[in-house]
Image (cartoon, rainbow, N blue to C red; front, side):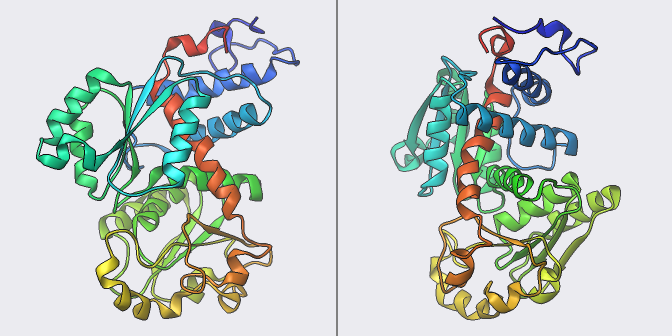
Length: 355
């Protein structure tokens, strides 16, 4: 039985007192789900450009409560009867497992759809596939190369489309990262993240996300390997509004100076294999090692989205050391993505007494 009538929920025009007890998680989860659902229901998550800071904070908060629900074995089948289609053009460990397990924990079902086995691999237009899949499933997650392909799919689909990774953006990873930093630092506002290495999808997504959450972001890359210039300009615009710092530099020590978080990624991403030798040479001075980390705050944390190449972008003693939180970060992919799935795909029944 629900503790109270959701029509009088706190945050929705009521001053009702919430009695504490076994159903308190239900109350908090209902409120958090409502806060995200009223903005995100039916929407796509392709990047962060069209999502405001408050809505991003609400998603992170919802992710934290869904993590609490999972850890305390609190039933949260918010997507009972729902199906997620998962299109994979790139290989995956964390993305596939976390989305599939997440849908199961939310009471729904996930379909693993290798791109090579879909008709798009034989020339069917993306628009046709998007429209057909919209008749079968309640949402689609795509992990692929070109951002333009995900956006075309979303334009033609009538169900929410989630970017599981493209060459340009990786929003689901960044929501997990924000939750992880919040857990370890107790706050997001004022936290300084130093991203060192390739100006890839992670760097672009960090630039989009950090200023909206009140965080400082510094990106250090070799010349010619920086993030998208349009994304940098967007980040600077939001940084002015939020009073935060955006720095893009070729000097890793400048980026890491007094940083709270040091973040890196592989120097050779999927699709870059042909230039692997050149990249390893150009990035040699950007390894996250003890000397570089000495520039950060004493209580810095190290993050990496994995898979990692020890001895290349990060020294083994750093990624396997006491400052590393990479496995908390990896786990939080599950909880952050559940928040996105629930916010975009849940229906009105998710707010009822069954929660």
